[in-house]
Image (cartoon, rainbow, N blue to C red; front, side, top):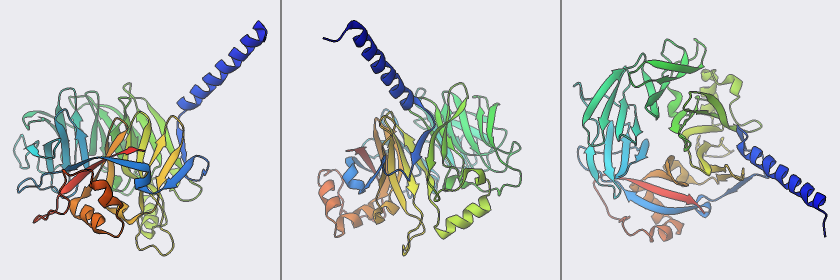
Length: 387
């Protein structure tokens, strides 16, 4: 029978081991190494993700949706944003349009164009910004105009940190900073991510660089051409949270403001980069990563969806599959599941292709009449979970 001192010593070792394990789990930034074969697994998308929900969005005259760029879940359904057509819509869980949230026009309660929005789920209010516009306009979910306030500069993207608007700025701003935090009157509380004055002024958020909410209640953000995601907490502190690494595929962090050279390499296809789609749940960081062009490939871009498991440090990256070019996302998370968007036309092509796996999977979702023809294409939201 082990002595009391031996038992105490074993208990001490176990306690130390548990503390060390917890410390490793809480260490930041989390390194997502694309070269580490021990922690990274690859495989077909549908062999690793399970389709859980299919929502065909209504697409009727006056409310057309062409390219879904952002969604949020509400208590009654979805907020759907198409920045190509400037449509910001309130939609129920079956995909039926309830109302338009923001009218397009020149009136005091309208926007001439929309570049982004942010949703406050507590007040059920939507903050809307537009290109070249120095004002934030706030609406209720039913489209009622609430108030507006002035910004000190224009912005490309917006999210909320409690009631504080967080904005990614255009490269035309007096701070020469990429991000600012305002109070709800529009006063600037903090700016960060400085860039050189000679930086080529273009909104790279369409290629990389993003702003989204963390499940912890803070904000995740990365600069364009950067592979590090930062966390902004409620005290306005910034800390690096996730860092993607690869031996020679990713753009060097120290060169992230050399955007002319970045575009040059990007156009050649000889670059892997974190796209502007990533979302964090309690257990996963879901991300969309472009993989550099392989020899003989027809496409300059090669998007893959993957995840980083924050509890096990396991990394998954989907294989090269042509249908990944048609999927946009992850656009939002709910629990540990994520939503992507695909056009119904592209979904029909997948069902009719030689590979029967899509036809088999969609047979479990009779609510989408996949072969029903329409005069125009319709968007479809797909919700996936990790198998």
